[in-house]
Amino acid sequence: MLLNLLSFSGVIAAFLAGYMFPRKAGWAVVVFAPVLGPATFTPVPAESLPLTTYRIAFCVAMGMTLRRVSTIATVRALLRNPLVKLVAVFTLYVALWSLQDRFANVLFTYIPNAITPFLLCFILIRSEEDLIRLVKIFVWQAAVISLFIIVEFCTDFSLSEALLRTVPGHDVSSIVSKKHEIITRAGMYRPAGIDGHPVFTAYRLTFLFLLTLWYGYGKKPLRWVPFVITLAGLFLLQTRATYVAVCAGLAFIIMELVLLKGVSIVKKIKKGAKLGLLMAGVLIVITVFYPEIINKTNAYMEKIWIITEETNWDLSITIKLDRIPVAFGHFMNRPIMGYGSPEHVLGAVMKGQDLPAPMIYLLSGGMVLFFIYISILFYMPYSLYKMSKGKLLSVDRRRFLAFASAAFLAGVLVVFSNWAEKHFMIMFMLYISICKVYTFRLGWQKSAKSGHVNRIIVPKTSGIIDAPV
Image (cartoon, rainbow, N blue to C red; front, side, top):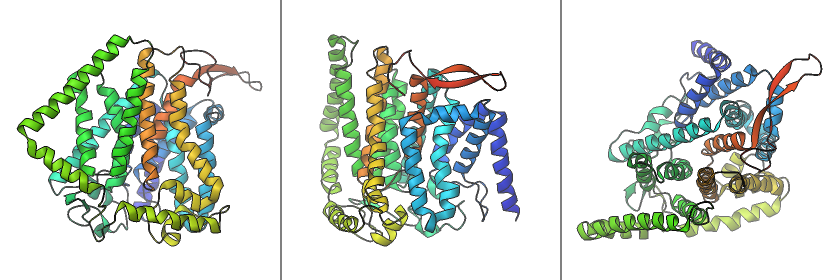
């Protein structure tokens, strides 16, 4: 009873904080929620309605929204964004398909988590300075997350285990850590990371990694620290889809930097030569003085593409690919309506055998849900890429949008390996923030009824970018 009362009080307090101190509370959510939320850190573990980090974030976002003079106008402006429309339709579709077996989870977790990133950042981000501040927070969060990965790999301490222990009713024995369920690959331990599983954490860092590269690009050596730490964290997580996605993102960045307008060819060649010489120098030093590192790395990379988890089973990529025809067989039986909630598909239909996220939704809601999901995935990097071609953008802005497009591309590609979307929240936060800065402007509107003049957000018709909302 006491915990339930504390949980309700926490909800009220979070709402009031967002209402009375929107800027401070909003930035506090941006700093802490992406780090503490993925492992479901629960400050008040009440049985009826646990007060989780994401629920606090949702209450703060609602308080910030109602604080605005023109709440309805703000929501309408937000809904003009095509991605917001797609996510709204997708969320409603999945919610309706999941009500039968996950009513409470849909109502109190799934829908609030879908709303929070858009409302929070659409209201919080007011300028390009705020946008850059948000990106810098994400960059240093990547460094902190990766630092705890290194600590977990080298010691018995697991931050995700400590956070998951606050979740009421959670099975401690199922926590991925050296003390409980150990996951290895090619004989090497795989840390769980902040998301409680190496795959989920790796997908989060896949998106953040390319932002750390932007943060360090052409800057002071100290700004490369997050990049180096995140690179080490990604390697220790040993997730193959991450390696592929990061390589695709890097290839996109190189292409965009080569084609970047406003920078002379000589400068491009000089920067490329410096980076090439630096990488060649590092490889030469390692090869000459530490040849055992090269040998062990080659042997490890040969094994990593064959072996999956070595916990209680040993799966190859071939076995994972063999599930695809089985899934298509199920799809052909119900191509329009699907089988219900994604959790039901994974547990009952596929007997716990994981599939790529698009196939999960193909089985869940049929062709309609599948196409909506695919549209969400590729609209994000495509629209940012299109945005980066704005004629009025400076070179620095185009470069930033190129790195952002690559980060979103990498964050999307990984879900074609596993159904893991925890990183989508920070992707939505950054996406709507970029749109807010580059495709919306502040305006004023006189109320026809009261005569009061209210501040509203409207699509830009001119300014630093000519991309549509």
